[in-house]
Image 1: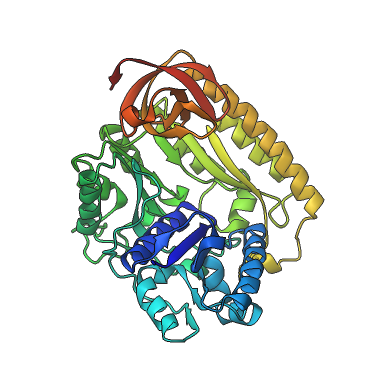
Image 2: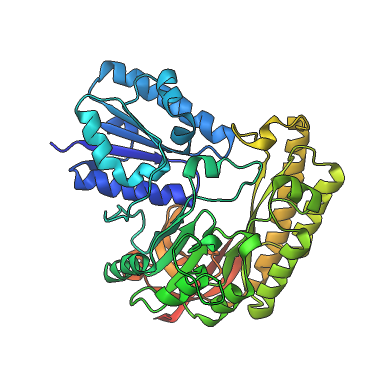
Length: 448
C-alpha cells in the first residue's frame, strides 16, 4: 500500500505555491494525498511567522501529532516554511519528535531531505542556498488557476518584517524558465496564472546584464511582455508589489497587455509619513497616492487591494487617523488588516514604544469597519454590469451555483453546472452586490 501524506499550509500565497511543489515531489516519491493529518504516514506543516497567532497554532497542531508519534514511531513529522527557518534546531529541542525542519529555500530539495530521514537521521535544513530551478510538477489545488514563482526572497529591511530573515535574499528565476512553466500550464488546460514574488517589482535586479544606459535588462515589466502571448493562458495576475518600485512603465504595460487583469495588490502599511519612515518602507503617503492616481488614469475601473498594519510601536491616535484618511481617500476594493505583532529578530520588536493590546485591537476594529463600508461602496459599480467571469469551482455552500472571479478579482457566484462550465470564461450579469462578493446570472451565449 502506498504511503499517505498530508500538508497543512499557513500564511501567504508563496507558502501555498511552495506546498503545491512539495506535494508534487511527495507524489513523485509514491506518496498519496489524504484529507486529514490523522490518516497520514507523513505530515508536513508549512508554516508562517508573519504574526504570532499563526506561529502558536503550529505549535498546538504539532503537540497533538508528537503524541501520536509516540504510539506510531513510523510517522514522519516535517516542519517547513518560515517558523522552521526562524527556529531551526531550537524547534527540535521544543518538539524532539520532529524528523525534518526545513526553511522555504529548501522546498525543492524535499526528496533528498526525506531520503536522509529514511536513513534514520533527524535533519535541519536552514542554511542559505541558491534555489535551483524547479523541475517538479506541483500538485495544483486548482485545475483552472495556478501560481508561478518568479522571484524568491526579499532584500528590503522593513523594521517589522521577518521575511528577509526567513526567506533569504532575492533570487530571480530566468525569463525562459518562467515562460516554459507557463507554456506547460497552458498545455495542461490552466487558464489563469498568478506570478508570485515577495517583492515582485524587484524581479530581475539580480540577473546579470544591463542596458547601455545602466538600467536593468530584465525588469518585471519586461517579463510581462515576455510571457504575455503564452498559448492557453488567458489571464495573468501578479503579487505582491512594493510602492517603492511600482513604476508608470509597469502600469502602462498592464493597461496595454490584454491578458493582464486590472487588479493591483500594493501594500501601504500606514497612511502616516513618520510611521512609514519608522517602518523603513522607503516611500511617502504622497507617493503612494500618486501611484493609485496613475493606475486610475490608465485604468479607471481597476481594483486596488492592499495590506495595512495598525498599532505599530509609537503610533499616535493622529497617525492612526492618517491611515483611516488614506483608506477613505483611496477606497480599496479589499484590504488585509492586522494589528502589529512583534517578530523575533526584527528591529521594531525591541523598541520600548510598544502599544497596549487594547489600543491595537480598538484601532483594528475601527479600520475594519471603514474597510467594509468602503468596499461595499466600491461594489456598487458592479450592479447590473456584465462581467467576464472565469469559472473555478462549485460554490461549496450551494451545489446549484458555480463560482469564479471577475478580472478585478471579485468572487462571483451564479447558477450553473460545474461539469460544463469549469475553466470557461462566462458573461455574467450582476444582480446582487456585497462588500467582497457578487451574485449574477449567466447570459447566453455562455462563453465570452
